[in-house]
Structures are given as structure tokens and as C-alpha cells.
Image (cartoon, rainbow, N blue to C red):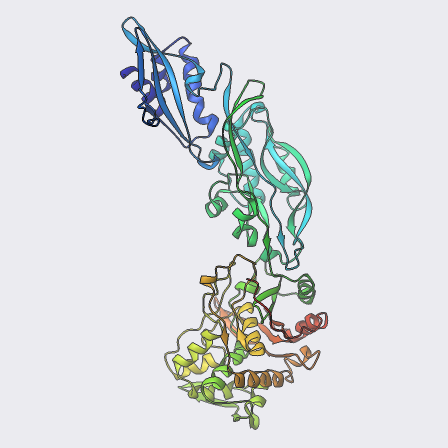
Amino acid sequence: MPAVRDFLIAWQVGNYPAAAKKTVGADRKQVESALGQVRAQLDAASLRLALGVPTEGDTKVKAIRKTGDDATASFSVKVDLGENGQPWTYKGSMRLRREGGKWKVVWDPSIINPALKPGQRLAVKTTVPPRALIKDGAGRSLLREVSVYAVGVYPGHLADTQRTLDGLAKQVKLGIGQRLDTERLLGRVRSAPPQEFLPLMTLEAGEHQALLTRLNQVPGLKFMKLPRVPIQPKAAPELVGGLGPATADRLQQVGAPYQPGDTIGVNGIQLLQQRRLAGTPTVKVVAQDPAGRVSQELAGWEGQQPQEVDTTLDASFQVRADKALAGLTVPASLVAVRPSTGEVIAVANHGTGGKNLAFEAEYPPGMTFGIVSAEALISKAGLNQASPTTCPGTITVGGRTFTSKARAEGNFATHFGFACQTTFAQLSGKLDVPTLMTEAAGLGLGKDWGLSVPAFTGSIPKPANDAEKAAIMVGEGGVRVSPLAMAMVAGAARYGTWRAPYVLKGLTDPSLTPPAQNLPRETISSLRALTTQSMRSLLAKDARVSNDVTGIAAVPTYKDKDRERVVSWFVGSRGDLAFAVAIEGKVYASRVARTFLSRTPPVATTTKQNPR
């Protein structure tokens, strides 16, 4: 018992010389080496050894059986394979012999694993399944096939493994600004079959050509050209996302079972749905002979098969949205939705540095927020499009002065069409704070939509006084929205129902999705009259490609980090289509909207089932 216990403890804690002293039948250095390589060959996070094995049925298995000067000991092994898979447990055994009154372990490779024979080693083989596609609403791939290279090594051929991996990590950091975990890479290389090509990362021939050229100078690295694979976004790249090597920072986001160098999603849907799109690897622990031939599979864990991700994007609308923004010289975004279902059908970003500003921008809405304020005034204060109103040049509310171009006395529709701030500032007295905030929330602003991708739903600070309330009514006072949020507002004004947006089919948790909000019938007709009247204004009229287009334009200025900025808006609808355009600069957003609408066939308003 003491001999077995001391051997197992020394092996487990990594004191291989002490374990080797407890053995006979082989050179101690050979034993030290064999025991010391087990963790590396398995890239094991931990190794646990225990005398005895679990009880089998009603039979209690003896830990040690002794016959004279010979004995057999049973023990259990539990190996934590870390990112390589589930814990591996198995039963082990060893022979002991008494020599000179002391019990010694008779060395044999089968002590490491009962199936291991002399000259063999353990290895971990990982098989990664092909990544699944991201598709549009019609089931067509949103990914383009590109040429790629697998960059890797033959572990058994490396003259200096550490030098090769350090060179790889250095070039990757220079090339993409991300750090590779060389310690974990080293474990991966040591545990792989020595004579087989081990891919460490996959790089696109075009996008990563400069990095590939530099990596070609790193000794020990090998390159394998792979068949063309669908990984590059055809459209909406900021939403769809891209792929790249699993760096240390990225692994913190996706976690196990992915390892340094694996090709993973780095942004967008590719990152958010990484586990679904990539599945999980199949892992096998095998015994190999010196030539690299697998003699036996000792354990295995089947991976999870990849699954496609279906989006709601409509290819024809997406193309039109992209072309509408293409000629601009400043950052811009456009998003289009179907109000009847909440489906997002186009997401376009131009000059945004890879950011999905169509979903995530935080801009002041200016007078496009008039749709929200008007809805509250019509639903809760009894106004309609014909209600008499005034539009003076200046008005002071609670000590704050608001200005507009003075207009003749008229009705609410007329002054809405002229985007009169002073009209709305005056009318703010007809709404109390709770009512204004509740009505804005009813149009989805500031609420959790349960969306499966990041999006800014809006932010409306609670006004502390009449001046702040009036500022919010005209889309100022710290109000911030995204183009998606305003497209949903426009859709509700047109269709009569606000529905939470969604872009991934079948992946939205119904329990997290807010219920639809129906507007009163009289509110709907008045809002349509207001937004129709607004189309005659100078800022909005260019978008009037047909009589059924409604919308509102605005060009609010605001301060961001002590810099004055401008955002040009057009928020509109036509049939079962609502959209918002936001451009960072003083531009006629209505002209961009016109380009989008001119290329877009009319969409009739219909009642549809929501295919979430």
C-alpha cells in the first residue's frame, strides 16, 4: 500500500524522479520521461490519480491483490483535458514486485494507460466541422467564397517549437493587433500527433495577404491552401460579421472548447452565434506509434454539429440600401423594416469603420422625434391634425427659449410639416412627464427589445422641469436614438402597431420580447396626415417619389466630446416598409431616401404572421 500510494502521489504532483525511484524493470530516466510527457501529450489541465476503483455492482473491487512477492494494484485516473473536451476517466493497473524486502512498481507503459504499448505515445486529435452558413430571408447565403490558407506546423518536425510559436504570435500581433496565447498554443502543439499537419489558424488570401507574407518568414510554419470557403460577407458586413484567429482577447468572449488560433467569429452574427455556426470539435485521445500511425482510439467525444443562422434580410432591399449610401463622403447608415412583422430587411452602413451604426448609433433625433411627441399629444391630449396651433419665431418655456422660423397661424398638420419647434414647445404643457415617458416607451424607445444582436433602443432622460420637458418634445435635452429605433417609430405611425424588431429567425426568446403596442385608430389617421404634410417641407420633399411616401426630416446639431456635430435624418415609410436614414454631416438625407425608394418597388401594407 505505501509503495503504490507514494508512486501515485509523486506522479500526480509532477515529482517524476521520486516516482521513478519506486520502479524497477526500466531505466529510471526513461520512466521519468514517460510519466513527464503524459500531461504534455494530452495538454491536460490536471491529472488526478486515486488508489482503487469504483465499486462494480455489488462487488467491491480490491485495490491491491497480493500473491507472495508479487502484487497487482488497481487505481483510477481522471484527466481534465481542458479545452480539448470532457474529463477522461479510466481504470489503471500496475504490477509490483518485492525485492530486498521493498515493494517496487514493475514499469510498463500500460501503467499510463492499459492500451499503451512500448514505443507508443498518447495524442489528442481534434476535428473541426465546416462552419455553417448565415442566410437571408429567402434562404440564400449571405457569405461569399474566398481563398484561404491554413497556417500550421508538423509538431514532430519543429526544431524549436517555442521559437516558431513566438514568431507566429509576434507577426499576428503586428498584423491584426491581437495577442495569441503562446503558452496554450504550446500545449496544443505538444498534444497533437507529431507527424500530422496541425492547422493553427486560417487566413484569407486577400485580406490577410500581408500577414501571410510575414508569417512565411517564421521558421517551422507551413502553409496549406484550402478549397474556397464561404466566410466573407456579401452584404451587411457590420451585421453579419467576419472571422479571424482566436486570440487571447477573443477567447475570453467565446470560451471553451475553442483554442488559440482557431478560426472564430470576431464580430457581428459570426461572433454572437459562434457556437451555433461553428459547432464544437470532435476530440479523440489515441495511441500512436513512432511513425505517427494510430494504433488505437482510447477515448472520444463527438462534437456538436454546426447549424445555419437564418436572418430576415431581403437581398433586393439590402442592395438598394447599400447603393443609396455609396456616394457619400461621410459616415451614414440606413435601416429598413417591415412594420407588420418587425422583420429587419436591410441594414446598411457606409464609412462607419466597421460599426453597425444602423443598430447602435446614439444620435439626437431632432424634430424627427416629433412623431413620438405628436402620438402622445393625439392619444392623450386630444389633438388631431386639424387642431389650431401657432408657430411663433421664439417661445420661452420654463426659462428656456426655443426658436423657429415664424409661420402664420394654422393647424397642427401644417406646423408639424414645417417642423416648428416652437409649436411643440408650447404644446408640451398639455402633457405631464409620466404620460410623455409612457407614450415614448409604448413606441419602443428605451425598452429591452429582446433582440439577438446589439442595438441601441433609445434613451430619454426624465425631465425635471417644464424646460426639459419641452426640449424632449423637440428631440433635444439629451434624447438619443438609433436609426433602427426611429424606423420602428415610423413603422408604428404608418401601420398602427409597434412590434419589436428582430433579425434572426427562430433565435429570439419570446419571453424576452415585449408585446405589440396598438395605437388608437384616430391616432393612426392623424399621424399619417402629419407625416404626409411633412413631405412638402424643403428638407423632406426630395423623398416624395410617390404619393404614399410619408416621413419627416431634421438636421439637429449637438455636442459630442466638446465638438459640435450634425446629423441629417430622414425617417419615413411606404406601405409595409419603414426606414430611417442618418448621416453624420449636413446632407439632404431625403435625397438618399429618394435613391433608396426609387430603386425599391412599392410594398403593400398587408397583415402577416410573425415568423419569429
